[in-house]
Length: 320
Length: 236
Image (cartoon, rainbow over all chains, first blue to last red; front, side, top):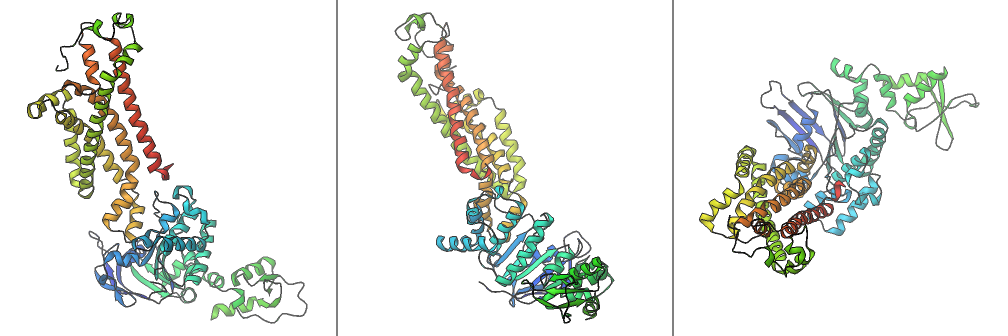
């Protein structure tokens, strides 16, 4: 197993016994291989339910879910689960096992030999930003952020083509959360898995997702598109309210300065504010507003001038 | 009381040193002299009774706990039954069992097993239930089968509780086994009851055997504390 898998929800409905409204109603969703897909919505939207249907921690009532074209009901359930990485908010590390033993759980179930498991663990610890010596520590000796890194390493251990993440950073402090968000994005570029990521935080969804599926109460899919398209064209009032009044700024936050069209810089640039390409258009606008300017000078990491960004240009960006 | 044999009276103990004939508080000479023929054999018997009883009690309690861990409805009936066993006075139990098994080890071990069950069963059950729900969810999500969940996750996480139960069970079994001397010549209770029923209770024998009972309980406890240190490194 490696690479990424395509995941398809085909008219899936899930009802919990004793409840009138469905947890998930007629959900159809096609998630291309390698996509970082975020399921977002208010509580009662069925996002966690949708996730747990995929690894069959919960059964569904109607429809079908398939991975790479094959229905998940066709595989023995433990085999299915061993091929899917699963990360939850409370992490759920085994307290009686060391970090290394936790990470080796699935490879061990799959019968990998010791040398291969060790090598894989070493590789994963580095990938998720932990020290090699951490392999011998117990979960109780780790911080919350470190635990979630271990949880991620454990989920990736057998190189599954699909990763399910249920509010993985929800219990972390804002600074640790943001750091892990950025690292997960980087990691996703490196390992190219299909990721289904559940959150109730629209900011996190916009930051992390290649695509976002917004679910509303009653488990109905409100919109499924790229973050930019959702911010530019909310499907209805619900989505518009959910993404907030500042959606223009959120859209600008998606655009890094090295990927927006710039105007040529004037010969004299000393009086202009300088902004690195690592910032977003939103940061640039914020700086302009703060300084009462209508343009900033965009420079690369080496300080080389690339051009200027004007307020007028940012308005055009939003009209696209 | 079956412990009262046709034994000699005090002055016949040992060489009848002044300490012994005067029945002083404690006579080291008597202890040295009778270690081999009185104290040591009874200590060994006491260890045997305790180990056999707790081992059998543990095996039964563990099996019952596994059953009720799967079938929750059985938990209360098992716990109540075990509780009822505990209310039977040991002396009564011995007398009833003598009718079936005579003055045998079986007669002694059965009540001891019964009493250890009451302590071990609830500890094992609560230990098995102590696995945090998110740990079980992660385990299921990773594709552990129920049997693997049990042996790789639930049982290891139950160890602190299981060892805690064993510590109490062993100490209480050591204490109750003292009464086992009422069934023939068994355990450290024998020298105690024997010395007690003499016309003048012989202090040295009572105290030395009593100290051995306490020492034995402490020794077992230390072994279990050491076992915990080795087996439960993760919680330290």
